[in-house]
Image (cartoon, rainbow, N blue to C red; front, top):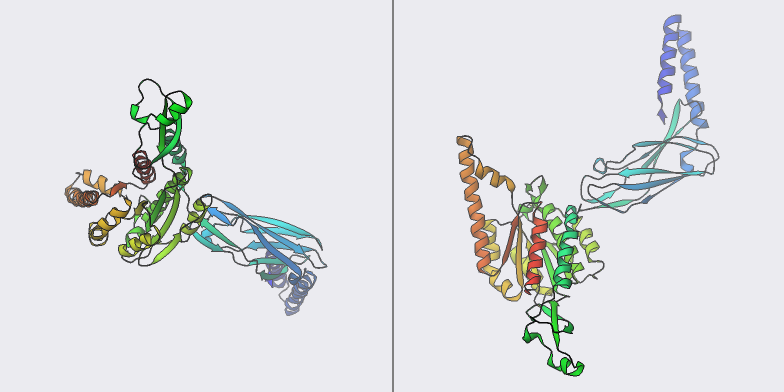
Length: 430
């Protein structure tokens, strides 16, 4: 049972009557009338147990965007249902409107649309739907919470999607407009065409030329159906916030852009996320569904405050990647972690695969290194310069082992990683 504002106003009016008359009989009469009216209102209100409630709508919403959930209410009772409905969600879902008025004749149904604008990734489980059925006088209402199961998965925002058209244009230029005249590692035969002045004579296909009575040359294009393995470090350094977002979220954004580009390039994409254990795994997914599968897995990832086990990550990659592929490790260029974890195993990994390490750099370090305003700023600049030098030295050590390194700020990392992938593809190193 719930009392409405009208009941409070009625009680206030009755109080004035009691004050004016200043008699006990008036007090008893006012209370009796008020209680009788409330009881009658409750008896005449539509029964809540006769209502049927169901939820439907968007099962997946990208972080930062909005989705809709439709609540369907069917009045299976004999009386008209007047009142309010509250669609219960946790605060981070930012559900609006919080309440909606309903007025349903017996046997009728209605839909109420709730807009969700989630503030966090992951699964959001809906709470109960609360219906308040008011009586004809509007003094009191019956109230009941009804379960209507619904789960919405909040996906990563994929902010780097805006760079995809530009990278696809470069891919088309690489793959379609500028065919290579010479065969190289990571290329495959494309087509034959007539020889023109200036073509390299080494590209002439003499057998085909003899059959066609024309001089034909072979053209080559970057090989398709290569394998890209993205390894996401979810250890303690991925929890640090850089540029207003966790390192893990920035790494996810770069991984999504790379995956989308590689799929359009005709390559296969796998993903592993790990720290001390494998947290997510997308291996062997169909090309047309791999991006959705990766996005789905990334939605549930959260950093863990433990030191990552690089040996576990490498063992997981070597366990299923038998042939040479591109291994992209999204981690931090922490000198201690790289020196103890990756460098001792760099030779083994680089001997079997092309390895690329991508890291999220903190732009505040560059700002601190350039500051000279006061003594405190000078000391901060010295510390920032030392940190930057250590990071540069770590990248140089990795490059000596044949590992490519991309180190960029959160907003620049996705396009920089995509450019590195396209450069490796153009050079025939995949």
